[in-house]
Image (cartoon, rainbow, N blue to C red; front, side, top):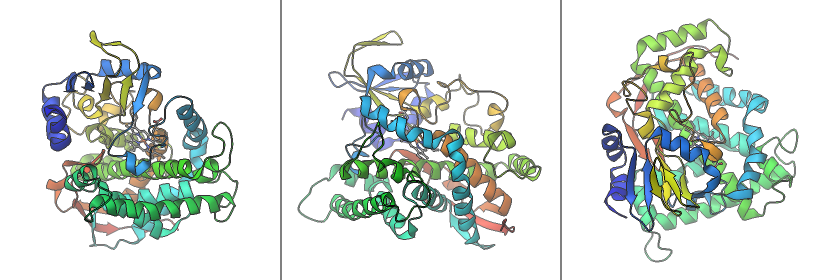
Length: 432
Ligand code: HEM
């Protein structure tokens, strides 16, 4: 690990902020022969995404023990294409309609637990909602217990920088109890339970409707191009979807609610928009301002600061800079979103940037891009709009400690600092 890499790992966002201040284009994190470049130039990132077929995705050492070696997040070539071909259609277009009631019911249930005057830890609250939603979509109704244990397990590894450091660098299988051994012990139980649920869904035990009523049903159906998955493969895909499908969305929802609370005029305008429609936020066209608010929140505080690490499979030319095969390229979403030459006054929350215009993919990339663009992007936008709309329709929130509304990394995801709290000022009746 060289100095820049150490600064990225230990300093995290403060290091990225210093690079953003100088509008860094390409930063060497480690020298050849295992060169690693952090890329903050939109043109270069566009070039990388367009050449994704010439790249090989290197997984993340932090996430690998969580999601497994065979995770679709790290797959390459035909296997990667098969995962995308199988799962992708379930997470976009008309297929999204069947998730509306899950998102609405889960959000309403979470709102019903709140009384006027109560105080919530914002990201914990949004995380519960998004984990319940993705849990239902992946495994079917699966009860709080399994999801709670899943969440505790992830938290043990990624919940804070010291925890992540211990989990990542003290991976000794024997000796004193370490976070790593606790992690492995918990993983064993979770794997068993997740597989059990998926296989019983396979037998029609818990999932109503078609065998593909859940993503587990789809993955256990044996359909081509994936074919039959053995237990290890199935486990890795289920845990990957549960993980990727809730952490980032929870952060995005918390950020959006936070930014709205900090900008009362925007909040009033969104409420007016909602008052003029019966929409639950499922269709972006019915709520253009709310949609713009969600997009601006993803720009200013992107839950994923980096896209996946791409490794060049042949010599290349990156913005006129000769770059050898084997170089690892990491596109930085955070750096692009904070460039004043791309987003004037980048630290200002201004949803107007997204009203009536489409930003070029290389300038705005909360979901990455190219062949690896987030498979759940459309689903995530749907969920984000629907949760925020339901909250605004039924709750008035006031931030108790806005100073905690600053970004902090949690593994790969960037959320508000833990402990950011909202007081529930007023609760309005929900639709029955
Ligand atoms: C606001 C929420 C989300 C954000 C910001 C986000 C962001 C990202 C990013 C940056 C990537 C890497 C793309 C690249 O390397 O170019 C990614 C990949 C992925 N995401 Fe998401 N994501 C979100 C929600 C979700 C959800 C809800 C799901 C599942 C239902 C999901 C599933 C995936 C999968 C499977 C991949 C791997 C795609 C591949 O390698 O082919 N994500 N996401």
